[in-house]
Length: 104
Image 1 (cartoon, helix red, strand yellow):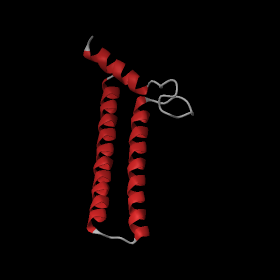
Image 2 (cartoon, rainbow, N blue to C red):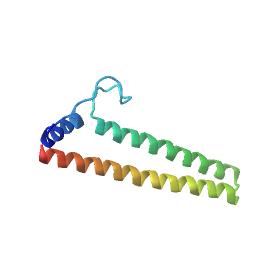
Image 3 (cartoon, helix red, strand yellow):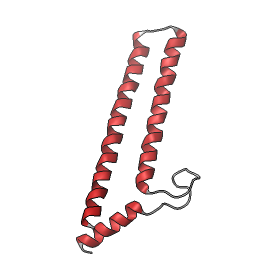
């Protein structure tokens, strides 16, 4: 295979609709790029819910002991790391798709 054939094939694969319910949506087809974005979104939603739950528990109990605050801080830092990773990976894949489209 030549480079242009590989680039063309990858570009087509990136924009080819997914079939079935692999994305967990009942609305129908989507691309794997959308699936990547959805996966990151769901992961970030779960982490945000975890942080919210921990925060509520601290607020309800009125306990602001250092161990619980430290755990909450650690989960918040994890959320920050995950959000940065999400942004970077989606941006990188988007730029790669853009490059393939130009070369295709």
